[in-house]
Image (cartoon, rainbow, N blue to C red; front, side, top):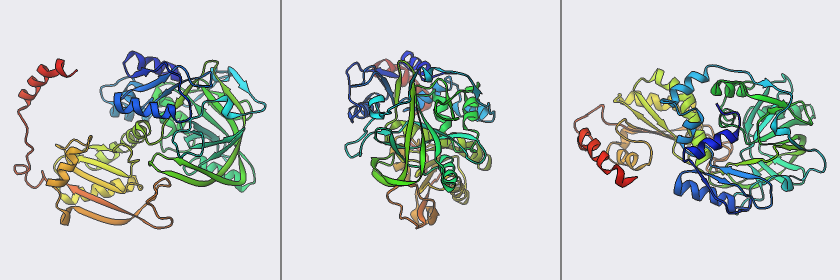
Length: 448
């Protein structure tokens, strides 16, 4: 598979999945706006050879479409089956003495805004933020190395603010702070796509890089940092090394989050001690509230949980997390099954994904993408007196502004299935399959 980001970008270019724009754009909102525009109008990743004020090129919406996730895995016939197979095999990372990410080293008078084109994504953001950076740290007690993605505010000079609300890095920091010690940390930008994917999988603390190796069918090469004993992917584009300070909290934000709202927190503060990068670095931009963060979360949730649910519910066909829903809403398609089984399925989804507030189950003849057909099923197949379940007991997501602190989260399950009770009455109108295929062949040249 791909050793680095560059190999994957080259493939996207060959596959027609990459749009290159030669104009020079600013990291202050212009690049974010361009990534959104290209994503919404063309459905492609964006490459910018020139970034105003920096010797960097940039790519955005790298995994902003399911098609590009498939390409990251070698374009398999059945992506979920391949993922399930590789997910079972861990390949530990391989330590190497040096790597391209250390070609250029800055270790004195660190000024992050001068060294890297960190984006200011929205007009209401307090300033520039790292959003695609993989945070790498060790458990202070066990020494296990793991990672995750956390938003990082660039406060100026060498100072940062980090929102630590997810394991395992948040747990590592709590342990270090309890002993009044800083937590060494590194922020890695511009990895190969499968290392990026593995960083956001919910998994045992010490296994994420081994999972990434399994997904790629080869070990991730890791190199030691300049100012700590942490190890980072040797073929990354850019690394910011530093530490999170104990006992210090400052206002972090406002920042336009993946939930689509500006949020502010009191967060730990850190200091960057070194910046290393390749000689001609590529900055990977991940725009919050965009196709890329939606695709990442939706694909991984489906890949991680669908096999387990199918074992318990054989009639389950498909799960879909709508764009921008962050897993707070989940759509499920099933072959005909009794309503009591649908309710059990909804409960199983809640058990696996406690943040899911809205779970909608429809028959398998209802496409889940796009939304129009789901609304059709809700309008013509849902009997509200029988198919709605409301309960309190969900787990709030920190970036969901509707959640009231300290209060149980209300959630609703909706059974909009009907084929099990009367497949004739609820048969969907359509033309014959042979006719549809013939017409599709005739029209294809006119529609391409």
